[in-house]
Every structure is written in C-alpha cells, then in structure tokens.
View 1 (cartoon, rainbow, N blue to C red):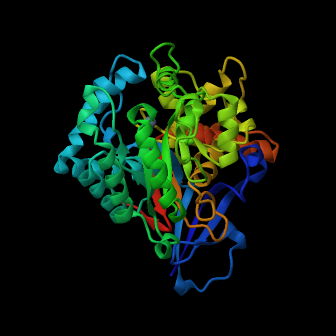
View 2 (view 1 turned 30 degrees about the vertical axis):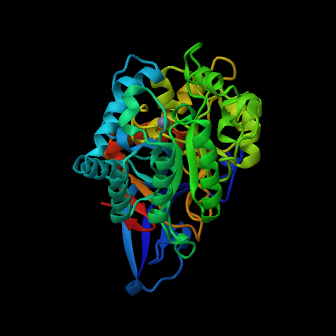
View 3 (view 1 turned 135 degrees about the vertical axis):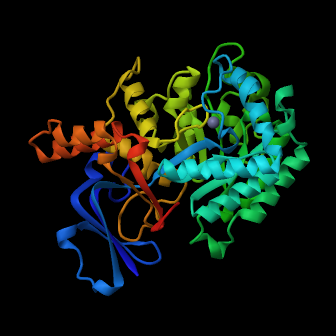
Length: 464
Ligand SMILES: [Zn+2]
C-alpha cells in the first residue's frame, strides 16, 4: 500500500553542488509526497496536482501546517560518548580526551552498560531527526554488536566502525589493542555486519574502518589498515577519522602528528604517505566513501587531495566552538571542490540536533576573521542533507525527495515551538516569492528547536 504525506515541503532537487543549492531549492507549501510500499518516493509535488490514485490502495497522512524535510544526515559522532555531553576537561582537545573521554569510553567494556547506551543512542538519533549517521564506535566488540543490532531493530540508517587505537596515554589503555588484534577485530566486524553485494542495495547499515586519529595508531597500524581497507573497499566499506582539528602550538594535535610521523601534511598519514618525509609506506585510505572530520587547518594541498580522491569533510562547527580551535574556513574549503557535510561531533559538539549545527555554522562563517560569508539558507539545507548523502556515497538513495529516492524524512511542526511558529505566522516576509521562500527556509532551519520535530521516517517507515 502506498502512502501520501501532505505537508509543506522543502528539498533540493537533483545533485547540486553547494554553490548550486539555491537554484535547486524546491518549496511546495501545500505539498504531497507519494511513497510506495517499499519506502521509495514515487512522486513529489503540489497536492492539487497529485496523480489519480485508487483510494483503497493509498493511506493519506495529513501533516497539516508541518514542514516535511529530507532526514538529517550526521556525518560525525561518537557512540561511546553518548553520555559525555559538556564533559569538562580543562578546555583543550588532548586534555579533554584524557580527563573526560577515554575513561567514559572504557565503561563500554561492560556489555549491559553498552546495551543501555545503544538504546539511548538510537533513541536520541530518532528524536533529533537524524535518519543517517556515520559513527565512531566503541573499541569493544560486544558493545559494537549491540549498537549494530539496535540500528537494525529500530530501522535507522548508518555507517558504524569500531574505534581503533593501538597507542596512547595511560588513560586510553583500556581502549587499546595490539596491532594484530586491531586488524582482526575490525575485519571480524566487517565480515559480521557489512552487507554482502546482493544485500547492499537494500541495506541500511554498513561498516567502516575507524582509527581514532593518527596519534592513536602507528606506522605499522596504518600499513595494516591500508591492506585491510584495500581488501574491503570494493564491498563498499567506509573509512573515517579526524583531520586537522586543533592547532595549539607546540603540543596541539596537528603539531604532534607532524612531529611524530615527520610528514609534510596530516592528511599524508591517511593517504599511505605516513613514513618520514611523507614517503609512501602503504595503501591510501582516502576515496569516495572516506570522510575526514573537522579539517579546520588544512593546507591547500590537503584540500586538493581530498577533492581529487572524492574524500568528504564532516564539518562540526558546534564542536569546534567547544574546543576553541577555530572553524573550518567555508569559502576556501568549498572553493577547493571538496564536499562538505554536517556533523555534530557528539559529544565534543553538545547537541544532537543538526539544525543547531546549521545555526552555529551560519554564525561562525559570518564571523570568520578573514573570509566572512553569510551562508544561503539553501546552502544550510545542502550541508544537512545532499552533502551528507554524497559524503556517504548514498546520493542515489537519499538526500532529497526526487522520485526513486528512499523516503527518509522529518516532520517539523512549528506549532510545537512558539518562537518558530509565531515567527513564521507573524514575521514580515518579502513580497518577492523567491525571497519569501529563502526567508521561510532560513527561519525554519535557524529557529527550529528539537521539540518541534515530531516524526522521523527512514525508507517510508516511521521510527519509534
Ligand atoms: Zn570526533
């Protein structure tokens, strides 16, 4: 049986770059979305123009004045930090990890604890309208199993990989394994949870190779991970890690990576060039299913290399504000041709709600010291939807409401959050229809509160 959703639709049609987002923006105030019983969008347009349907074979869900948007895609978050929001570690990244995060992640060794955390994690995602997520997982296989199981049970879409760490400070010891075990456990997880070629077209859950960052592994680990990724790349396995997050001079993350590997760029460590002088020591981990989080302080050559390999950026401005290490330069990064998607970086980012990330993105980029820019509302929507789908190489399946895509959707009811509802009802709107559309979308994205998010759908199915 098909389902017809009525509501106020916003989405970006086609496969626009972020620079093309405004042209791709579609607003349908009295809109309708027809979804078949496989959860695939059959038709999207004005309700008045809907196809003739046999009433007996269609269920109509009228969302009234609520907005229908493509589901939010969060391309960077940490499962074992589910309860670590606003943990205080003295401010800096490496101190925060040692004081607050490594000990919290060590608790996931307890399977019962991890099972509760997995339920909580999925519940938070659904409540925030995050239909697809790229997740740094736990170091512990049992904790990973319950998370994969919970995603499947709830019907969430996502990419998850166990956190790999083979070296680190004492506080990280419980999360570390030998080089050999790191490879074995990662390989086992992929074999167990990654869909086969036959299953992949319909699968919702995938696996990833996820070293925490270059300082958590060694040249031996990188060489072995390169071999492992090369083996699984053809099956659509993902790769993700952190890049150029904190540049505090002397002992900051970037200086520490360049110092300990003796490489020219941080990206070289993920690109097979992890030996001194950036000499090739193994296979590259970059590619169209690779996502680098943060990219605040990239050199031009790193941006070029990411664009060339179709590696995406997970942009996490709320987290970057929390750690005070600057923000990713918007104009310079998108000018390089790199795809930029949104991430909460939970729990360094202290929100689960992607519109909060968009709100922060707008503010940090209009406040950039050198190349300030006001993001267009369609660019904000791109960051949360199309760019995320592209980062995860799922653009043929999700990211907008074009026919043939799977119906991942959120329902935002402005009546549930007065500041939003009143602003939309009473706020001044431009007479020009296009400006009115831009203004309305801007208000919906910037003034939205999570309480206004009433329903979350993945592939046509409402998640509970
Ligand atoms: Zn992170």
